[in-house]
Image (tube, rainbow, N blue to C red; front, side, top):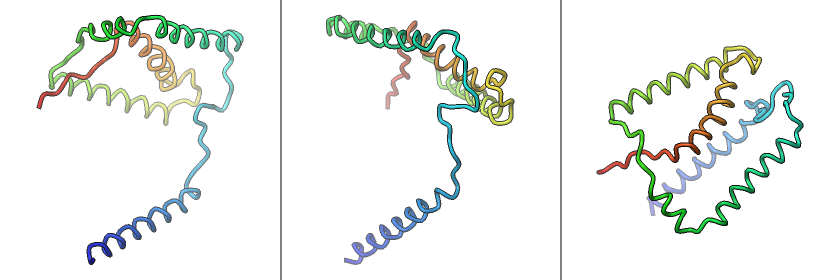
Length: 150
């Protein structure tokens, strides 16, 4: 019985802290512009071309998945070659280098120019991550971490 009342007391305190924090959130927040910026971007092609191109790409991918036999997809998936497996030391150095690049980009995004064309953060995100990584993924396949044996 004592453990049950102690559990209810802890739950009531946790609920009180959560409600207090929720009540304070509106006082410390500012508007967020998730996918917007201070100025508009001028697309080089008419918007309709972008919309049609995106719709065709999605429709083509669904069509390919609908037409290909499931066994062929399973064979393709099973025939992947493991590439890019590194030892622990190399993985640590690559991770530290990636973190350093990320820290520099975040600092450039915060402290750098407000112009998205001269700041390396938006250029890196939009060009390397959204476009480059997607194309790399399609070109050489799925990256899979090495299986850890315990």
